[in-house]
Amino acid sequence: MPTVANFISQFSSDVARPSRFNVQITPPSTLNTQGVKVSDLTFSCESTELPSITFATTEQKFGSNPIEKYPYQVQFNDITLTFIVKDTMNEKIFFDSWMDKIVPSSSYNVNYKADYAGTLTVNQFSLEDKLTYSVVLHEAYPISVNQLDLDWSSDGFHKLAVVFAYTYWENNLI
Image 1 (cartoon, rainbow, N blue to C red):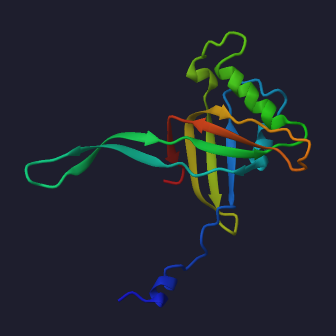
Image 2: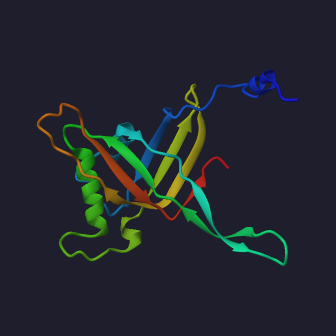
């Protein structure tokens, strides 16, 4: 019979903390970063999520058996990165430039994916700063750079949400 002591004994180490992470962005080599140091984005990323995986399923019924679901396709959900924006507005400048690389405002012709896709690496760390989980999102690119509201009555700071699409992700530690 399960007891509280059995439950507690399952935690021989501490629990994973959502605040112990970083994100490394590798933009496409063709992107003009406008003098923005990409490594600085690692430190200004306030929040994100680890990617998920979902199977698209179809239902099938055989004879009098119950309906069963069968997977037929893998789906990867977009992820959102939220950045604290410095007074230089470098984060906004960088992602505006990346978006313009995907669909240039001079022509509105979509470029080839190889010219605008990069990679994102999301790392989870233990309390001892040991890497415990790491994923790479391949062929990643921003699909939405959210607005920054301006308001005379606000004394807060800007947070820029950027939504990324990607082709697939893989666990770096497997």
